[in-house]
Length: 421
Image (cartoon, rainbow, N blue to C red):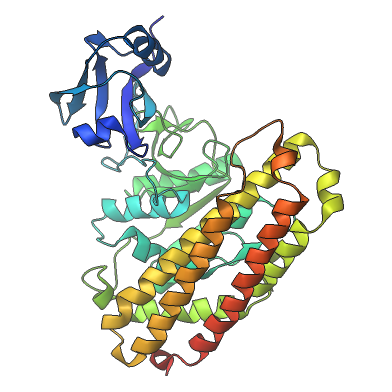
């Protein structure tokens, strides 16, 4: 049966050694036909692959920028990540919309929902700044944060040490945060921003703790247009929920200098590095452990065997996934920090040797964490307690102890950074 809501299947990523990637297909292309048959859904695509598995060659029809292209491949797996894209919602007569806020796409390295949303808003206002530089200017890559309940809020840039607040202040932006308000009150704030042609950063539009962007409203304000990683439409989606928290720019965002190039934001980079030093030395803020204290509490949580014995299967699965995400996010953040220190050597020549060492230490931390993360189960499994057990958690503790030692070296170098003088 044809899905009446489905618009098509869009390619959002590739597996390693994907035959479609090797054939020249690109992220963002649309999968239209499989061996001459129109593709209606992921399920139907699976059926087509089975039906034609004995065929020597398969012809794939792709749509790219309104142009049809054809590729010849072998039968079998395509090696792609696909998103089912649904038909866009009806735009009603009273709709108020800010046009041309681009889609949030799931691509490796760009999936922090908060910073991706900020980047899209900056793009809308033609602020040219690299996504990874944006993260570094917030202090986020240097923030090691932990809470013993393994809450998802650990990762939110606006929770604990507020990296969002620092970022916007660091860039000289005018902004406000609103939360814990009635639906009527928060919508009134949203409508005012939209009427001023400024999109709104919003949390929990889909009830997953993710951030997205409100781009308009209609139907007497009952419906909010949005962009988020949970969208299944090309045009704006209708948010299923009123957000639990919003960030409003009271003036259209703009940079203090002409561009977001590193050479034009040196003062902001130095300010972010001061925050990095602060985060390394802090123990706790707003109910979250930070720095080496966070690593210590993380180790203690992993070593609390009674805690794991008393968890239900669902809670055990949740904690395992959060723990895996902690290793993954921290490893990625260390990689970002290493890259920034390497990139700014050309600007801060007097700190060249210190920056080289900092880049080296953060790169080493990223590897230690990444190597450990590979052995943590990522998916739910009935045998999860056998795979993620006392012994495997002990190995994770060893890795975190190594990170603590490297952090002490980093703290020592940061204290002597010539660019701080």
